[in-house]
Amino acid sequence: MSYMKEFTKGLLKENPNLVMLLGMCPTLAVTTMAQNGLGMGLATTFVLVCSNLVISLLKKVIPDTVRLPCYIVIIAGFVTFVSIMLDSFLPDLAEALGVFLSLITVNCIILGRAEMFASKNKVLPSVLDGLGMGLGFTMSLIVVGAIRELLGTGKIFGFQIAPDFVQPMTIFILPAGGFFTLGCVIAVLGVITKKKPRKISCDSCPSREVCKNTEKKECA
Image (tube, rainbow, N blue to C red):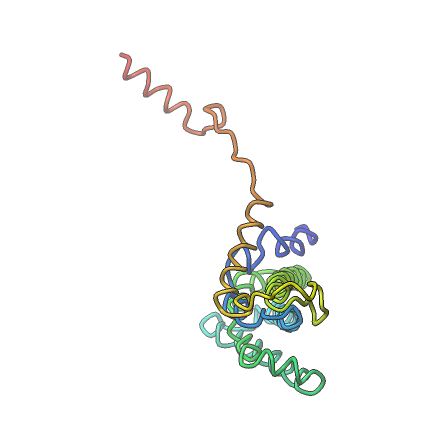
């Protein structure tokens, strides 16, 4: 197993947000500012890595019939820890993320990686998988948040970027702007990562002998 492949796949090729279209609710809700996207992404990454680690360690202990409730309990424990830390040290960010911070518990990205990867693989690959997926999710939130904040307020991370004479387009910090921005980012990524179609020929077809025999029968 290639450890580097497990880490990098979530950055672009299998980006949970922009390719697999998971975690759409927090993406559209909290990305009115790049700072909020960064906070949500890092919080999700922490929970994803820690939950993958624990679930991989306990995969042979957790009964198959109750695995999903067990996964949710494990994830909820780390989400509670993150919530307490943010409330204590970054209360403004915790307030900005609001209910979506608690909803990390049922984020389909985390549950999906727990079910599809961590429960079937060893600890190190599971940690790298969680880290790569989390960072890919974080990058997508930052990109969408930065675009929306720049076009909607003229700022990025609170710093004034656009000249004073440029009128901000407030629609970009509204839900409609979130949908539009996310769609554009997904489209651009699709163009960048687009692969050339494979050339298909009879030589590589496993049924070529059958086709030849069929043609002979038809000719006869």
